[in-house]
Image (cartoon, rainbow, N blue to C red; front, side):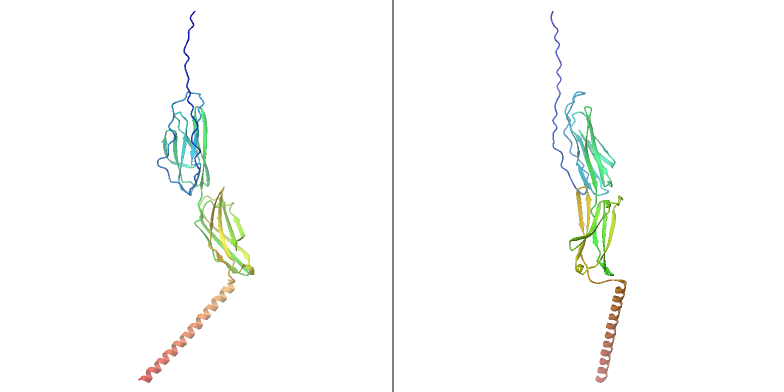
Length: 284
């Protein structure tokens, strides 16, 4: 009896290596939108349903520093050989999009939260993977100004102004005298989400060794590993004691001195005019 031989179908499954290295981190104050995001590699032929297909999901850049209120672009891509489109999930508001084979770029607009997370999702052959990026919004102080110190009643008063910074809750203000820290304050209790101005006032007892010492004010933003520093111009601790009584006495002294100058000048002018008048009469 002849046996019936049936040809067995061959099932070829392509292996797709996980290629490419992880994208480098980028840190910039703000990122302009990229009009033509770089596409990921073109998808390969379809794999059979249920087959395990190695693939990666990538979200770049992975770390973004942006000025509050600005916009950024994130590129969400995958190496899945199946016709799939990755998606982005985030609490930030979206703007424009750009798409291509295996990738989608999303614009995130008006970033005002200090730190946000975005996730890129892609499903390939029934398996879902994701990649994560962090978006940080901050602004270094526009200026750090230390007023000239005021001495009254044997005490110095220092007043430092830190203007237009964000986020204020990560700010530490430090006063230094002769290079040594004499006072610092953290504003971690502040929870506002707007640009803000900060004024620090500090009073301390004057000592003979403080005379002619340089004092500076320093602002530091500690942003989870990123440190932003700004400093004021130095001021000198003078010996004048500008109490209200001292100010009144100084003002009275100045007024009296000006009065004396005016009296002396008036008398000299009268003598000069009298001399000229006598000379003119003698000549006639």
